[in-house]
Length: 384
Ligand SMILES: Nc1ncnc2c1ncn2[C@@H]1O[C@H](COP(=O)(O)OP(=O)(O)O)[C@@H](O)[C@H]1O
Ligand SMILES: [Mg+2]
Image 1: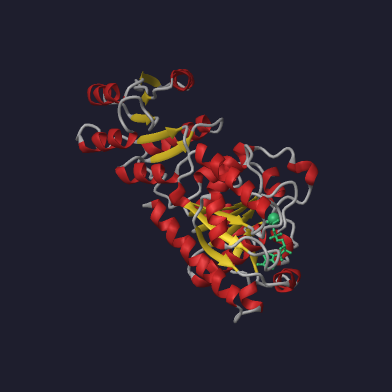
Image 2 (image 1 turned 90 degrees about the vertical axis):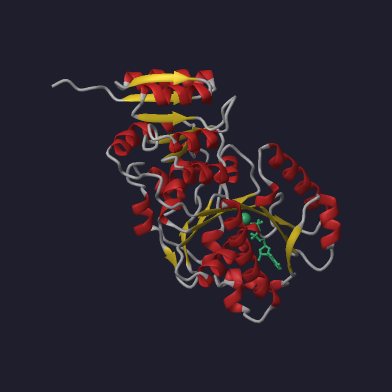
């Protein structure tokens, strides 16, 4: 029997990644056509009728969104599976492409090729792949330690979970070398970021996290606790981490990630991917200066100010900068201010209780609930 090889059209303006992909797909016995421009891609797609189209949505001549829209509008390519392979990790780009009819979206990384090879036969069998809903990703960070990032991440996640009772909320502690969310919520079981990392990547699917991510009693969320061992934390693999995060985004509706105060090769991709970036700012002068620097940096990394949610936390006392002063110094708009709770916040943390449960009538409880609602709303907006 004569088996016709499967043909793939690669549309990618970047010569290095286009050539690499062409070479590797060819080695996997596909027939590969490759072009650098969106317009050439359209012509080839309509003339050569490939079985699959892989495109980088950032092209020299056409926006990826326009390319996908035109492919979908033409009856010759209306049903040809399209995969966006992007060097940007931008959730609004991704959602726009998927809504325009792209079948899947993945980031260029060392994991991209194995994922493509796994995806192509599934797409050819007509399985929907990216149609899997992805939860909303919220990254919590601050410019300085001790600002209340971990406490707020846990407590806002709890408010979200109790507010949206039908939603599945997950918290992931990515603070290295040692996380603190487990301590705040009183989690002592074994499963954590490092134990999951040790597992075979084939096992840590979204179904795995759906069934196994522990639910923390009275906190209304599931927790992937952080590293407990500073030594192994140094060996953390960014690609592996991204795979785990993607699986949890498929198994949960909201994923709140505590990033702490590190901007690194591990945390940056997550910040770039996040639907909402929650920036916690303190009230002292040095935090304000550092926050400004961090924000300037994030902007150069393509973080959209509309996705930023700035929360002022009076974690150290009544003194310090006012909201207006802080806004002037950082150039950021403060959405809410969490009042100073003196020893009460630490008391709640030490007892592993959520603030809104321990102090339901305190104004900070109201602020925390409000923050949860506003963050979810902002996430909805930025997903379009
Ligand atoms: N609004 C607040 N009022 C009083 N104490 C607070 C407040 N916010 C945080 N804290 C306390 O500040 C300390 C540091 O908080 P943490 O969440 O560990 O900060 P980070 O994660 O930024 O290092 C904790 O003991 C916490 O209880
Ligand atoms: Mg912390």
